[in-house]
Length: 76
Image 1: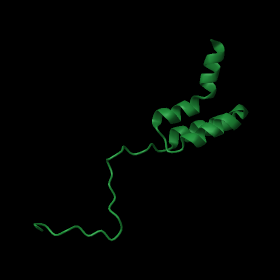
Image 2: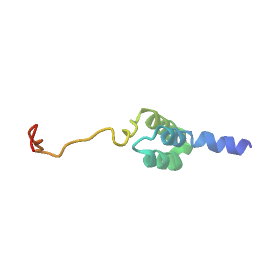
Image 3: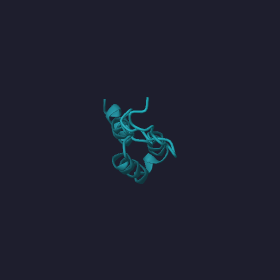
Image 4: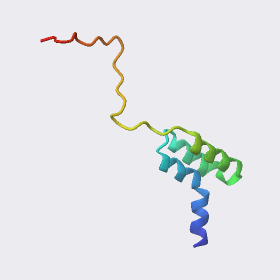
C-alpha cells in the first residue's frame, strides 16, 4: 500500500498534467520519469504541469483561412 502511494506521489506532476489536459503532457511525463528522482526534476515537472495552458475546447474556436472574404449579405 505504501509503495502504491509512493508511486502516486512520484507521478503526481504527470497526473496533474493529464487531469488538466495540458498541451505538453508527454513532455511532462518524460521529464518526470527520467529526472523526477532528482527532486529538482520532479519540482520542475510539477511547475510545468501547473502553469501550462490546457487545450482549448473542441469546436469552440474557428479561425478563418488567410485572405478569407465572406460572401455579401443577401447573396442568392
